[in-house]
Image 1: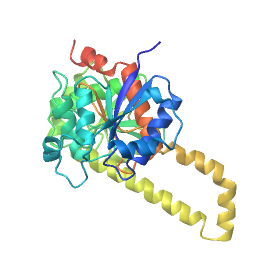
Image 2 (image 1 turned 30 degrees about the vertical axis):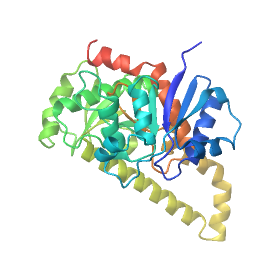
Image 3 (image 1 turned 45 degrees about the vertical axis):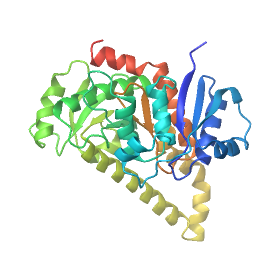
Image 4 (image 1 turned 30 degrees about the horizontal axis):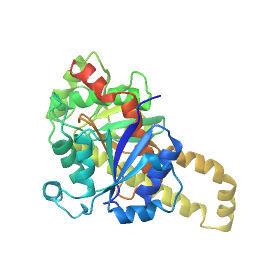
Length: 335
């Protein structure tokens, strides 16, 4: 029987907390045998939410945390001062080995600070990148880094590429993933100082499948499986992709319901449209992992629903089953 994966779920801090967090945990343990979830937050509120559902009670446990880190809190001050918050208590459970991973829809800055300060980076890892899986026309791509390190160095990007390759192959299941660096053109001589310094280093790496530069316009078409950049550019690409996708979907819906004839056509096309839109549903892949830490820290959207919560919990389970930290130590650090 496989070892149980224990996950600390921060039930507070998101737009839909704690209701969607609790429902996501309930659905996760009902669908997957090997998961145990600690739901961290105000005990009475969590009890009231859990009372709504039937679930395997031996695989969900409430951890009382009376305080909460909100989106208005300073990340550094919140981690230092709000020691009884759901986020800090959940992160400490990972640090102390009580949980294998952490999932939260809360304050992004606090998650990044808490992950690196409380959980801690693996020995030999220079920076921990945030790496969401993004849907593309040809499957998915890993965008690394998208928010954690805005002033990265070339050596950081090389580590990002290697960690991203390991994650993409063993968690997402893409063999020999293609790695590219974000640039303003395909030519090797193009780019800013960071890209020009990083490109030859990636080219020399024998343990990754480096294919060169990728322009932002090629990203939605799945031109590479692991897309490497520093966090400023990565975050702009992430937010633009999410905003554009949301806007296009909204306009398509408006157009399909603007007249009786178009509404009739939309009703006929609805099954195929739902199938198509599901391809671009980022929630099915879980959240964005902060790679290179001593345990898995996953950031999900602030407005995450129970589906995204459930898939993020599954994501932690896969991370442990595939021993991603062990593979990072073996392939990247030579341990």
